[in-house]
Image (cartoon, rainbow, N blue to C red; front, side):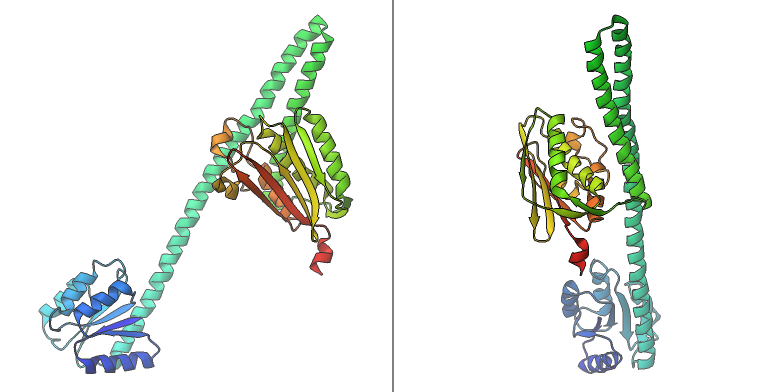
Length: 374
């Protein structure tokens, strides 16, 4: 929008008519004081400002405008009948004006200058947008680098932990073998096996994240019995965690189209997390049912829970809750992998949680995605 400031109504009318005829949106003010009030409320691309006005003259208006953040990028063209007065022209430029036009105004020259300033404004705005986008991208590269470095550090630590334990148990096993203590050997072998399993899970997650990044995470989709998978996982997880009572709430789901191994991976991850982050709880609840055409699966625990802020980020890559990172091990990629798997099944993942009251992680997937798309 263009603001014309002139105390002569006939000048305003003629300028406004020409500019509007050429497609420009125009606002007017008949005094410097009125112009300042409008500039405080609106943004203008260009101000055509008469120099010689009673009360506040054009120079004073321009000098005042220079302190307004709203008018920081606004161009000013001065109008004056005193074109030969070099002092006036000099003062105009020093007051913040970018150009000067003598009265009577040559409308062709005015239009040419207005179009030029509009083009400069558009180019400047585009350049600012590019700079803003570039700054955001640079900050995103920096953040990505920081997260990557942090992840490498965490991964190294997490991989070393089971490896150190395995080495320690093997040394203890050697001593037990010398003493022929079979019972102790069995116990320590079981502990070694647990650490090896932890190592396998960590390596599997690392491989999955690499496949996701390279677009090579493969799926073998076919129809499978979800109820059978649900029962099998519940049984295995209960046997592996006898200290926790796993309460199963299931309704007949039937056959589901998807990668059974990958869906099992998500379900096991949710259950494992529920047990891991509920160290003082005695039970967790599993639920599976149909919601319309979608399968709904959830795991409810009564553990530490999390804030709304963490719930919004918990499925992001490399995200770990700082308050729990020292207490609970993990790479911060398990739930990200789960989200990728479920989204590749045209489904959604989510969580409901309250600090100190536990969490409920869930996913939904279409039982028959081909039928759903028809």
